[in-house]
Length: 400
Image (cartoon, rainbow, N blue to C red; front, side, top):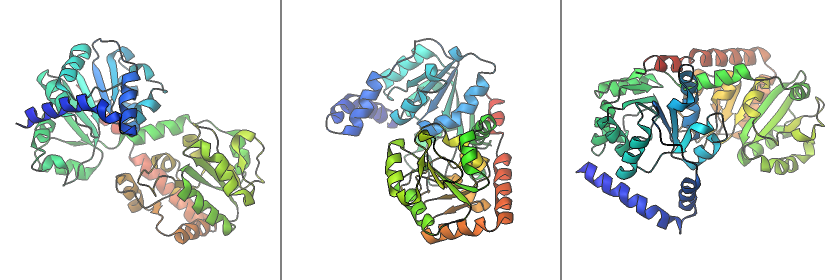
């Protein structure tokens, strides 16, 4: 009964989404993005990798790179559900492998399998589309779930989740990013293996390839550095309050999530004479540098001692693994329930939630005066991230 109801609902969704787009801007964007996106030529692909959005794609990249050590690009297909993920990934190295996953309508699902005939399907973390998995398992596609995280109250363990539970039981491999998820799945009768989080492999690889930035190094001089990564207004307001305390021997680099906001940040902090990166007129006599160009953030964490990561005040925390791999003392806003790595970092002693602005400011100033403790924290952070590397190898060696 569930399958029939789901097939009917998916068919209706395909029919009514364009109509809904006429009255809802977000739905209209979703529909038009898919309608206007490029497709991939219909031909058999051995590996199908599905990502909900950009975050999952970052998890997939180490796997894709390892698969390409023994296989050609022609054997790989990467699908996205979210336009926000697709529109970013299409600019990257694997743009010729990327397309939107069709809606989970049975006719579209069958067409997908007839055109691409994948042998191995790798789903990242979640986004388990019922018709795609059911139909794929009928066709003997080998399914894997990687970077999986499950809590006791996940819907597949509830009264309405049994159909998905049955699909997951038939996956060739479920690789979890944490031990609690692995134990839970095993207790529920699902074969699961603790592999870890492939994002640590990703940020470690990025760090190894990071180039030196001479202008930034000259700006830093011998000072400690607070890098504000992917900032929004709450993080910038925190910096304004910190500057009122006149921290000594501290250089501040602000990388706004939206570079169009860089002029506004310069205006907000004008009393401190901030400089913009593209003007090139900054040096170690300046205290604040605002990045007004994209693509620099991950490599600039190599210069940072402290990282204030944006998005934590809105529930959309940005990447905190990037500063961790460089050993930063990390801070972020309080709305991080959807980001379990945030609590892991807090428990490990090198990250803090900012519940009170004064505590953040006091901690920065305290550690500026206690270099021994700051260095100890940085070593602890680097050791933690190093211990998490290797998930990609543990997964890749078991792919059929």
